[in-house]
Length: 160
Image 1: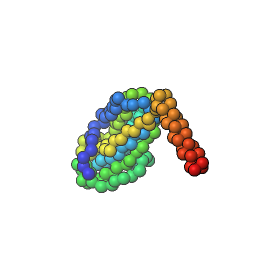
Image 2: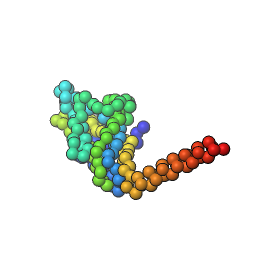
Image 3: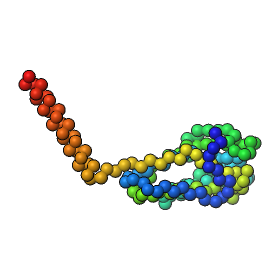
Image 4: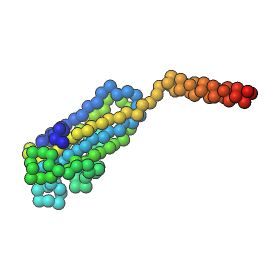
């Protein structure tokens, strides 16, 4: 569709998540759309790059675009160029209660506006829950009770 967050500048767009429960890692998923006339490094107009910063790592994407192609059509303002949408997934070691990632377009050929832009949609962040020690103790005690109950029922059925 045409409902997504679009950035038509070379400015940085930051995404901040706060109040995350206890976890050891995060799974980040999103769809990125290359909108309008993105130029590859082999063209006389390029290159255009997308910089995605997750944690302390910055990825520079182009010309080999990572992710899974999930859309190819006219989604943006300039109908003369086909747009491409790529789905991405990252597993990030992480323990803090806040998380941020950033996206910026650039490169010597990036013009922005209605000529070149990017969009993002379907952002999902999953935290792997880490149980507290009290939760582990209750879980183990519960398994013990279930085991004792099963054993007792089995013994009773054998004596009858």
